Length: 90
Image 1 (cartoon, rainbow, N blue to C red):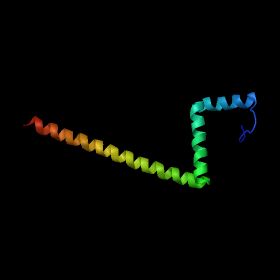
Image 2 (image 1 turned 45 degrees about the vertical axis):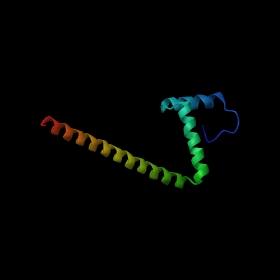
Image 3 (image 1 turned 135 degrees about the vertical axis):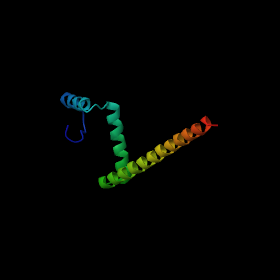
Image 4 (image 1 turned 60 degrees about the horizontal axis):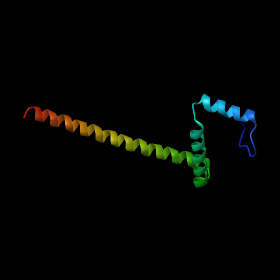
């Protein structure tokens, strides 16, 4: 399918869309959600390059947050291990 279709789609166009979605293992609901998110982002930021930089910033912050969560969990397990080691010799 080339571009956005303003009117009703032909059966061939719908088959092509279904084949493509199957090929990339994407459900119709996931595709629809992606289009909605894209439209919201376009309305909010207007130009594509700003959307791209925003996504990079968001992904970076999420990665930092997840790293901090992982480090906190590892610290908890280290403390738990030390505590159990101390309690074993008490």
